[in-house]
Image (cartoon, rainbow over all chains, first blue to last red):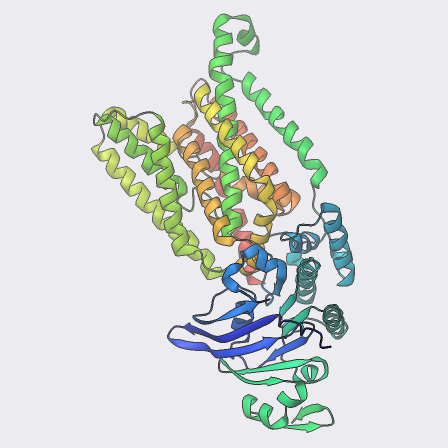
Length: 256
Length: 330
């Protein structure tokens, strides 16, 4: 007997975005099954963040559409969308003296859980992301990496919701030290093991080769390649797209 | 470094502070305290003049401070103030227009003035936001202030034009608005503004965390599930409501809406569940204190309240700007 194949988590059909007359995304289509760690790679300006924003439901494509669990984007209110998909935007500077704990708490805004449960989840997230000792500090006085961990902890609270499916991370590792990078990857694995999906924008191609279940390679707004890390991040493709002489040594890409 | 005041300090302070300013405000004046209680005239002065005036001062200050909290949070700019970004100016144009229309013989009901002030406030706010609300870079911040200046200049030009066309009686009233004065206090205004304050108390506390999320940025707020444009509209309408009530009751009183939220944030951080009540009470108390000074410093004459608040507020504003400037220079 064949078990019913799980419906894909997200289907994107022909996503196209125009900005000032140029298309910054052109006819991008893909399908993401549940339980996968997907990495989005590509040169600067390839359209990675734009694509992430579309998946997060923050913007609508000029052409094409996104189907989340067989329902079109338009069917969801902002709160419904946020209950399912959590976005961690690129780090931006905070201007007001909220404490780290207050920032993390905001992950519970789309929650329908009780205050007590939320408080536990916030405390757990503060510990998980190693910022419990910063909880009552002014967010503006924290270092870049510490601020990034606050954002990640906030999104972690948001991911604890019953309906949550997808964790979107825009360059989450750029400000983190080695240990916290590993911690972040570990957390991502924890989610995929629970049947949720993770999509992250990364610049470290070797990290993508080691960790990703699937890689989407974007260049100039087009989806150039999609598939397993080994199949997508070959020396030839990477050399071609990033315009750099790259070779494969063992399982790692090397360049001079 | 944690906050000076925590959640548990807010309520006692909010109950205590108004009493500390309202009672001296009630008792101080050109006559001795005993006179207020011993004579019939004293009793009338106390209940029909002093009490409504002190309460109105508190309510006007509270509403302006509340508008300041909301607008600063929405535009993520700690220098935004209903006066600086033109809302008060727009509301004053509406109020002045009403005076001129009435003077020219139109029979309009009294609440028409608040309605016109509200319309002027909303319009001014929309123009400023259209020009100045884009991201959180330094440029966007200065654009907002510049847009506010533009709207303010336009508003004062229109008020100038209206005063030029106005009759003597109308001119006197228009001048009254542009300087700001609490001498028009009566129980009707006190009740009206108390109702507005109560309505705000029913509406905003449940939305405090949404305002917190907006402090992080629009993208962040939307990604935690907030309908940002709806929230922005709510802020615009409430700010216009609060400011237009304050302006039609007492004219343009500057800086209360700027410094009260600031003081509150210095004391207790930026979380709106603490800043909102604290700033509202601070705003009310500050204006009661300023009004008490205005009435007693050169008694029996009276300083215009707008001058007193500006004398206190402008140096504070300059100090804040110096601080902001340091923050952006690293």
